[in-house]
Amino acid sequence: QSLSLDNRRLLLPRKPMMFFIALSLSLVLCLLVSQLYVRAMADYSPQQDPAIPCVEAGMDFKKGDLLEIVDQSDTLWWQAKKLPSTSACAGLIPSTNLLRRKQKEFWWSQPYQPHTCIKPYLINEKCVEAEDGEFSTNIEGIYLTGFRRSLRLCRRQCLSTGSSQQSFYTRCPGSSYSALNNPYEEVVRYQRNPQDKHRLVALMGPSGVGVNELRRRLFEINPVTFQGAVPHTTRAARSYEESGKEYHFINRELFENMVYNNRFLEYGEYKGHFYGTSLDAVKDVLNSGGICVIDIEPHAIQSVRTHELKAYIIYVKPPTAERMKETRKDAQITTNYYDNRPFKEEDFQEMEEAARKMESHYCQFFDYVMVNDGLQDSCVQLLRAVRRAQDEPQWVPANWIRPTEAF
Ligand SMILES: Nc1ncnc2c1ncn2[C@@H]1O[C@H](COP(=O)(O)OP(=O)(O)OP(=O)(O)O)[C@@H](O)[C@H]1O
Image (cartoon, rainbow, N blue to C red; front, side, top):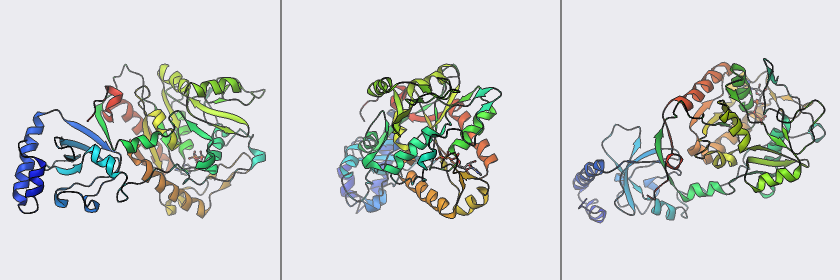
């Protein structure tokens, strides 16, 4: 540690050998100090960074990469290894403070954009109240909750209005910005204790990719273990509906009160009625020993990434447009009850484009990525991922496990 980075900076261009000696010396010293692991919340490329002291010594990384910080003694440049790694060599990366500053520079920062990228399907307004879909919602007498159309259409309405008139909200407005203000998220290895509550499982993907089909199939496998959260709505219950089954039917005042008290993970207004998924509805499932599996929009990511829910986020990715054409021959786009229609070529292209944008903005939050190609294989993959989330060690934000120290 007696070799300062400034020395290295001076030596590097002329004597590369001395640099490697300096790196390995500090590596040995750092191994004696506690280890720090972070997840990159942004992309970085030394080749595009004019300020790096030595491009060859720099290490590029992408959002979502896991990094082991082996030396953070310098305020500007740290040494890190990408995980998994068998290499003894570390590379130079900008420190948190430096990366924050660089955020303002055009060469690496991708400005946050709300999810206007996801093209909605047209909603036929006169059919919006049609609630019963193509999904059978009773398995062995157990009602499968969370598949009603209004909530799904409410989300699409939000997507169609775009950012300026957003109508679907979360508990943590603007929280995606904070991810960019913290370009490295400290992570620790965490394994759920079998006596503890299950981790929430949140599925996300571009509209039409099959998130609800996969959830429903998972629930069918074991409707007692796998459950959705009962949504809330301010619309009146129909004669055949029961509060707490299809929805929690509540009045507007109570809904607004819940919003005010941050009780919703996400909520929105659609055709004069509010719809939302509450934290308590998720906790009801978790407290009863079940595994709660919900689908979320990207803006709800930060609402579920909490110490309490420890959400495991599964991204459902579409296969190529060619594969979708083959596998979705009999599939129907959910537009509304009367108007479901087969997929068209342009739907696949739009889904691919929406997926590309979703990945580029949010991939750092994905714990698991699965391609929904063949339905059978996808179900097996999903089941395994859900089990792995509950039973195997995973990297999670350090502040879920212990208060974070500034680093
Ligand atoms: N792997 C697959 N192979 C064939 N068909 C599929 C597959 N996955 C989903 N589907 C079908 O595609 C259609 C759309 O799926 P689904 O309704 O689950 O989409 P979604 O992602 O929930 O989107 P949204 O909530 O916006 O409707 C459905 O007809 C579903 O049965």
